[in-house]
Image (cartoon, rainbow, N blue to C red):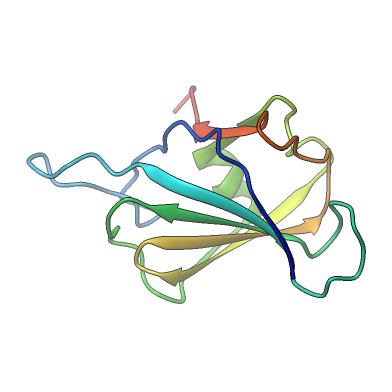
Length: 124
């Protein structure tokens, strides 16, 4: 499989409605890794069907197997430098309580290794 680690990850928005919340006395939940993958190894470029797997530093209260729509992904995460959400549509699947797999249903701008970052939505 074509896998690579994009190490420039900053933070995540914590929202109860989408399963990302934290107790007032709990540790902060951070993104500990972000791994891109081409599940079918169909090409050597960022394209439709490629995944971005976010692993969090602790379990969230997301439902294992729960899904996120494009609107929910975009409302909760900001992708920058470059903005891979430009021209893209995403869907999300919680594969565990601490892992969210985002699929590029329609790939947009390709991420830059060591340059693209993912953070919480600044307007939320």
